[in-house]
Image 1 (spheres, one colour):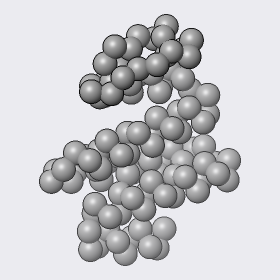
Image 2 (cartoon, helix red, strand yellow):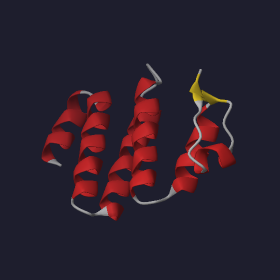
Image 3 (cartoon, one colour):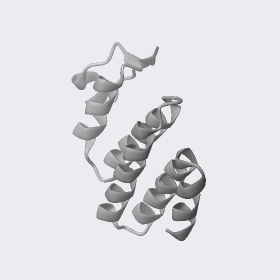
Length: 103
């Protein structure tokens, strides 16, 4: 956390990646609540940084990975539907192992 706090003082966009890394660590430790809190903070920072949408997408993709890791396929499918990055998918295709295509 100290590293993230220091990074936030200099560059909030970099701190976003720090929170994503913290979420990965918390997930690896089995701390799903901590992982969720860290990814939520990353999401807040990414949304506040308006220079690019890449950080928003990166955080959303990792959040989707957290959903999958904890067995929350509905959360992952919801992101797929809302992202606009995937076309030609529906819930039955995804849940039955079908494929989707990136735009």
